[in-house]
Length: 592
View 1 (spheres, rainbow, N blue to C red):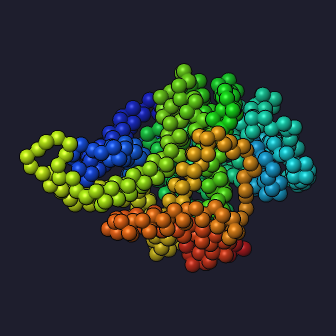
View 2 (view 1 turned 180 degrees about the vertical axis):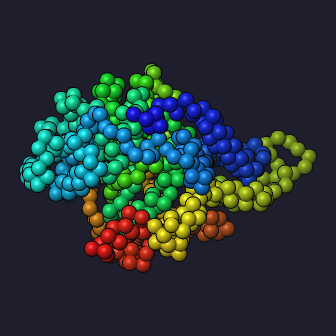
View 3 (view 1 turned 90 degrees about the horizontal axis):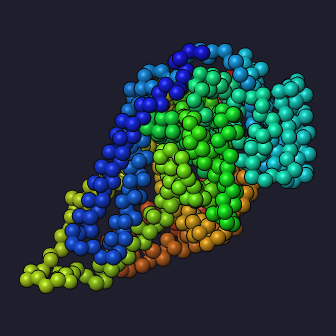
């Protein structure tokens, strides 16, 4: 096996990259904190102002991290450099060497649409067959289905597929009687009972699929890199047609690779695992990745829901590297197709990530693994932080309006403290914040527009720009609603309400008005109340808060209309939110 395919040789080049990123993020967070301190006044802070600063600095550092990753990804993309090797080509480029070992492809399912699952498997089978390496892969459908009727459909669909492909001993189906441990337990049971003939396993979700060439390259990388335990691909959402899903598919497809390159650059051999569309070294997983059962009751005790971060941490603790390779294309999944399904998925992920707080102190973990666990927690705590800042900023403005300016502080002075309005600092802070929030999107857009070929894959430059503007507007409306959802989810979890493991909704599901009104009326009432109070007490502050309150006030109609298949089809007809994969599919259908 060529040494060019060996990922392990790059693992010791991470230190200077992490120092660079840390300096950039810390500098931006310090700049934001200083500007906010000046804007609020250099006098001794009130309790509310001190609390606001305590929330502001970590939240500002969080968006600075995303911005810095996007900026690094942009530089790498513009210079056409690989995030790990920093050369023109990555470790998986060129012709693929022969495969000496066998890989198992595992598809854990739980009360899924059996026909859809088997259709994706058939697509994957033919894609692998086209590479000429099909014999190196075996397929396992691992069912945790609890509904007997669905289980019967699974057996029937699997039998038909097995016979149609002439799969012989390459395609297996197994249904567990008890789904202890949920998805992680399903995989662990296979590892314990069936993994002996296989060096590697590729985990797929029921709604995910990968191209055969990508799978072959992953297996070749593992064979060439004996100290590598997990290789995670960059997963692209595709295949859904509602307006909501199409907007998110476009956003992730345009921006996601940029961010993935930036994160791959500094994470190196201590990257993370997302639970699917990744290849794993079976022996290392069996030895090091057994999940503990947390003491106490759910939601923060019991079985770990978000197993992927923990398995990556345990794999690294065992001495094996974990890599993110964003250049490996052909890795896809489906998204929830409406706002409520999307939020409910986040609800389960939030509970699982909050459980990780119980694991931060485990002995032997690499500091990067602790950082990943902490970042996973903060990803969901960030929304309540922003909500807290909004409430505090409104309270501070109202307090200043009602009390007026304070000309003499708590200590005796001869001269009054004249109020100063730091407009330069206010404008600077506003511009920096907007740059951090929208900078990665603008950098990704710029990278696409630089190349005519690249822009054409998204429908051309005019369509790309219009789609970009539409996605920014749509995501701005969604952001405050997701902030409210995450804040309420956190409150429910911390008060002892567990979510369990419900089957995930699939397909292009619309949302009924009655459901939307029931879930979003509290959001709308909060937005209307905020507008009424601020308009009465301090109307000058109202324009600053409008982007948030408008999303809340119109949350129900936005949720309903964006869930409509017709709205998504109309957007596609006019070239909005077109992705390269969709454009290729449309071109194939037109030719045929």
